[in-house]
Image 1 (cartoon, one colour):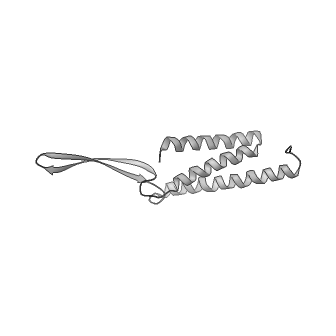
Image 2: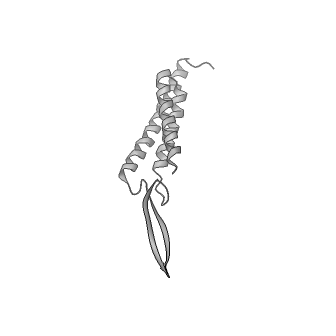
Image 3: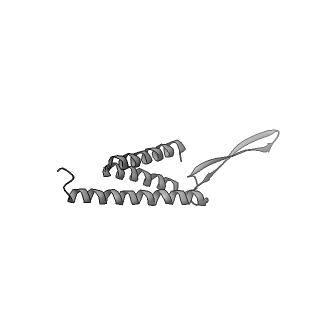
Length: 118
C-alpha cells in the first residue's frame, strides 16, 4: 500500500466529517464516511504483498568465485498478521458504515420535514 495515499484519504475523510458536523450537511458526512470506509478496506486487505511495507535490511549471499549477491528483504504488516492493523481497519470500516447510515438517515429526516428544496 502506498502510505501517502492512505494518509491523504484518511485526512480528507476526517476533514470532511468534521466539516459536515460543523455545517450540519449530511452529503459531506456521507462522502467523508465513504472515504473512511475505503481506508478501512485498504487496511483489511490481507494479501501476501499488501499492507504496510517493512524494510528488514539486506542480506549478502555468497554465490561462489568471489561473487556476491545482495537481496533486500521486505515484509508486509497487514490485517492477516498484525492484530493492531486488523483492529484499526475494522474501526475505520465500521465507523465509515455508521457514518453512511447516519448521513442517509439525516437526509431522509430532512426530506420528510421539507428541509431540502426539490
